[in-house]
Image (cartoon, rainbow, N blue to C red; front, side):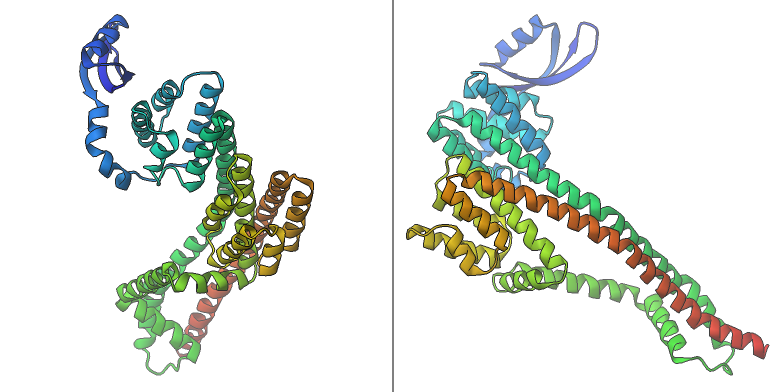
Length: 405
């Protein structure tokens, strides 16, 4: 059924806008007139959708996890109440505040109304709906438990969002301190020190210590070639990012990352948490084990762990358990292996995976909080030490200059 976007005036003269799902433009105007709305502009969004459907996927930006989880929960609630899928999709497309997601759901509704399965319609928008989402919806459609699966998906997305929010919030203060320190140092090197260095240039009898010369030379370089420094930093950052994302560089960087002190431990815990929670969600949703292992391979975002999961999947296909192959890889902590082993023996694998994920989420939160608590005094000490060194390098020659005067 076409979706019309309207703009109009109420009897009280108030501007209103919205969408209406109805057969044609004439019926849309009649319905709005009965509701006391004088139509100023009416557009058929579904026609634009059909013209651009082949190109739409490329232009859709990623959807915030919070908006996606809210929409998913709304859709699950409507289906659980017995509302037909097409009507439920129409309702969430109108209720969703995110414009991009609202447009996508309107297009998905039209495709489903034309007979396409929901999971195939969602798969046309990979930036909004990842493999996990599509696979879960497919399992829900095949098992007839779509409302239950969507509810689990909403909970899964909310858990993802909560962990990401905690990490971002914890890193705000250290990031601000780093930027603030950088600005102070740039100010000293580009404005204060050059003026002081002029005094010593006018007094050739003063012999500068080596550390003072280093400070003044560095200041002169920054004043004259600040643009070169920016280009060097940008070039190094871009080169590193290209290498890190390349097919040959990513496995090397991922291996290095896992071996780094503190950061490596944190990266491993985040990857394990994603692996266990995603696998639990997929298995709960009725996705077959081998398919689920193929999907969670990319969730870890680490090639070293991904390779271990690939090897485990091959062994599982030959009849082995999950815990054995993962243990052989040596990449997963003993607690994870132990809990998975218990889950397999007791038939409660999904529950055990969830418990592991909850445990690691808590550990990640504690580690991040501890790391940020440590970073604060360290950055203050480093900042104070650098500034003290600069002052020392400047003040010693200044005292010599005053003695000569």
